[in-house]
Amino acid sequence: MKMHILDLGRMYVDESAFVAGIHGGTLRNQNPVAQWIEFPVTATLVESKDGYILYDTGCNIRESVIPDDEDTPSPFVSGEDAILPARLEKMGIRPSDVKCVVLSHMHCDHVGYLYLFKNAEIVVAEREFANAMKLYGLRGFGPGPYKYADFEDFLAAGMNWRLLTEDFREYEIADGVKAVTLGSGHTFSMTGFSVSLPKSGNFLFSADALYCSKNLGPPIRIPGLIFDSVGYIKSAGFIAEYAKKTGSKIVFGHDLEQFVTLKRAPDAYYD
Image (cartoon, rainbow, N blue to C red; front, side, top):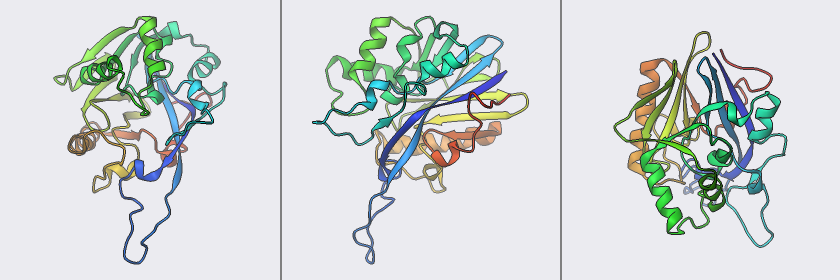
């Protein structure tokens, strides 16, 4: 079994979106300067004896174009050679070769190319799916990270959904590969990705349930961009305990400092 970590471009954001109050004022520094930080957009591909399993699908290239009359708190930057379809093509993999796609959640930097995988089983938390689809139907996305174009693409494609209820803590996809229910926090419900490799050991991908190591602490620090602060703390605690129990390395969702230390496709992989 092999695990490939895919670099799918970069996004940028005010650091306070990742860690609330990180640049808060004090008596002697009453007007601190905000920090504009870079973070990676990623996906993870597992090559198992049962077939290819993908965790998230990255951001669609169209999100890199910002009209002159619009603004965004988190711009996306990537080239045609770095988006998911190009990365897979360079590895000799077609979307039809992928047997399962696990979605951490349904924000644009995670579902941008989901529509390509209409032959795969799509695993996502039921609560995330139901609430995001409700917002879509009510035209309630606003300027946030759920994007109408992404939903229209995958709904038109007709996907094979597998919805995980909160009763599931672990859903086994293949030997050594599991979807892990993390609960609410960043969104209505997040799904993690657990991979156990013979040589490289165990990994737990948190996606945006933990943006970066600063969120985990200790102490746990909530982000500024959040849906459920109480759920976030509970989820973070669960991730820490799960990782300890399974001896897993936590791979944070958007931690550039950690990301640059990881083996990345196509030059290297974990096995």
